Length: 141
Image (cartoon, rainbow, N blue to C red; front, top):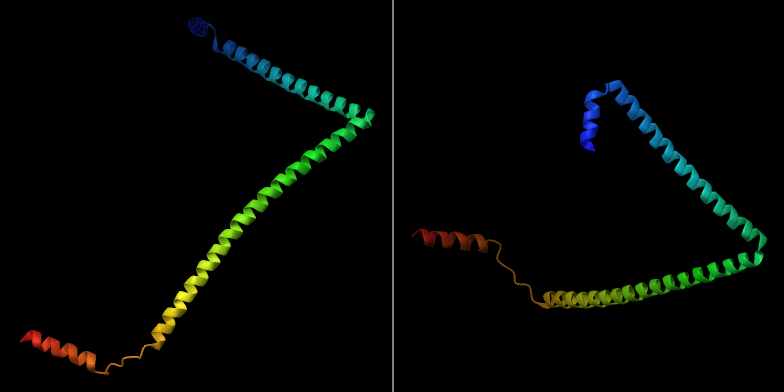
């Protein structure tokens, strides 16, 4: 098929090929639009039929509403259970973190009290530099 196409392309003038291509493109475009319009009309007809049926039969409408409300209530209950489970899980984690924090605070307070209870050792003001210079002079000998 492709070889026949190439032969035709070789012997047919370019303006005739362009006209043929334009015609094919227009035909494909019109087909796609027709299909889209047909699908839209079909959908509208189905919606109109549903609307008319519901308007004529209020008992169906009330049953549908009750069913929808029941399903919605079930979904809300499931979401509420999931939220409660998350809240309980994270609440437990927060309690654990708070107890850990209290233990750490008490350990820091104990260390602080231990450091404050120790007598402070005072160093002579020039002792550090004198010792270091004496060490240097001994090392130089």
